[in-house]
Amino acid sequence: MSSGVFSYSNPRVIHWGRGSVAQLSAELQRLEVLRVALVTTRSLLGELDRLPAKPVVTIVISQHAPMSQIDAGVEEASSAGADGVVSFGGGSAIDAAKIVSVRLADGDGRALPHLAIPTTLSVAELAAGAGYTNEAGDKAGMRDPRLLVEAVIYDAELTLATPMELWLSTGIRALDHAVEGFLAGGEHPFNDVMALEAIRGLFSSLPRAKADPHNLDVRTENQLAAWFSFTLPGASASGLSHTMGKQIGARYRIPHGVTSCLLLPHVMTYLAKKTPERMAVLTEALGGPAADRVRHLIAFLGLPQHIADYGVGEAELRRAADEVAGKYPAEDLLRIYLSAL
Image (cartoon, rainbow, N blue to C red; front, side, top):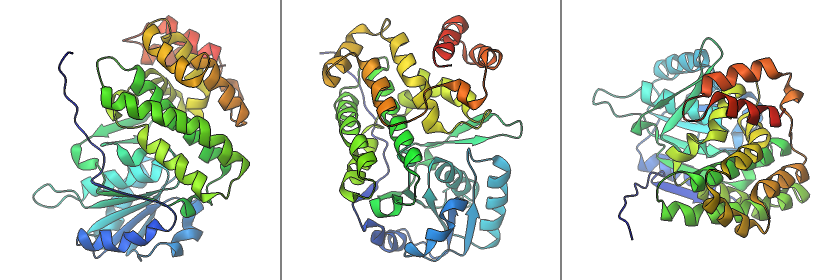
């Protein structure tokens, strides 16, 4: 057997299960946080009384985390004397909170402690990177080990306000993490086991969440499967479906989860020719051609499948393909985009 190395990079503490938000107070005490800056989204402002910590300032972030809002949030948190950050929401709120925590680093360069309470399945809380939208409206990102959050709380009760389409589409985003991590180059045996478990778990539990939206045990299954999908974050986040999705997501206001719904089956079809052995394992795990099974799952969940529904046409996709080209030829990427049109 060949040699290798694996660097485990999940947050230090992960709580899960209904009612686990009660652990927030103990985590803040452990991290010696007294003045919390809360980063959330407008849709969750009515849910803040469910959190057992009262913030000194609340920062509201919109979809795709515009840097102008993050800049304003840094100023607000600094003026309020915040010594810790809690994010409550999906990937945009969590990524914004990461940047706020690093921008407010102390004199020794230590970021403010950040605790994440996710309400979607996109697992931004597990990555030592953060995405945002720049002034030109394009998606950009930053990487810094200090962006990794200190603790995550997966409390299914706090996800009930999440619209079902957003919940399910971010579940497909998690599926995208697992598939792209599994198909990544090199050897990654730990991730392979976790990714396959995540794929099976998402295929099993997402349809049950759609059928029974208020079943907290099923939602916890969704959250655990999403967690398992992201043990190889670098490879997953730089996968072809992710990269192509980010290129059209912020620019045309398509949510991250939806870009995975639009592109993942078509990217899998393309990669099947390049990684036939790996795709054969996925086909065996899913009980049928992997790309087709993913396409059928997305359709069964009633999620978007066509880029054209977002007002994007061939000219825009040609531009995106040219911008993403490098490892893969622009002509190939355009064919993928057009197959999803």
